[in-house]
Length: 226
Image (cartoon, rainbow, N blue to C red; front, side, top):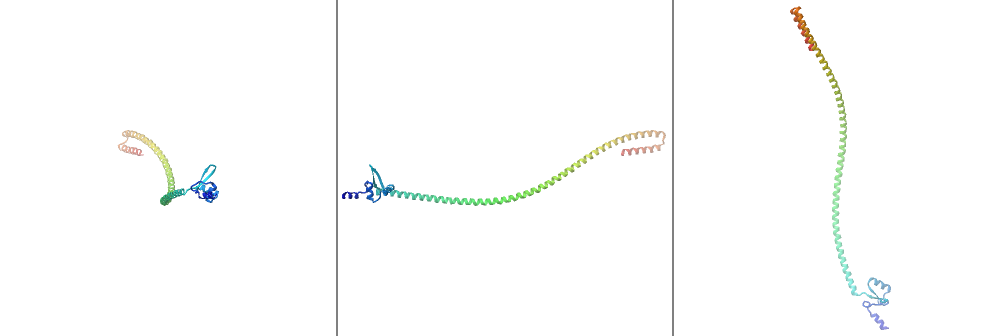
């Protein structure tokens, strides 16, 4: 019995598979702690028949895992350094972009101020233009009224000219009638003068005939001049 107990105590849980109660006794842990260590990978579990056997993970395996973990940590550290460097570069680029955007914003604000000044000046010019347009509209209305008066005066003058033209036509007709009458009278006087001359040659003396001829000639000239 004592020899068996001594053999159990000398068994290495890193090299040999042990039952549940044996490994718990060997390591001085409870079955619940055993289950946690199995889940953490510190103890390996294998089903042998109806019973499960356990064995500690070897130190070499731990060293390999620790080495792998260290490599992973170094790689993660390098990745973090690369990520940090990338983030730093992105931050510098972002600050550069922000500076450019701020410069563009300042330029935009300056342009906006200039446009605002130009808009105010344009608005003032528009107001002056509208005022001038109102004045020109009033002047145009006055000119149209004056033109309307001129048109009325022109119509009155045309009416008067038409009346004068009609009067001139009437006077021309009357003048032509009087000329016709003068021609008739002259013809009659000529015939009368010829008749008197014939009579005077027969019955009147020479002085009387000359006097009568002068009188008839003066009468004919007077009728012709009228």
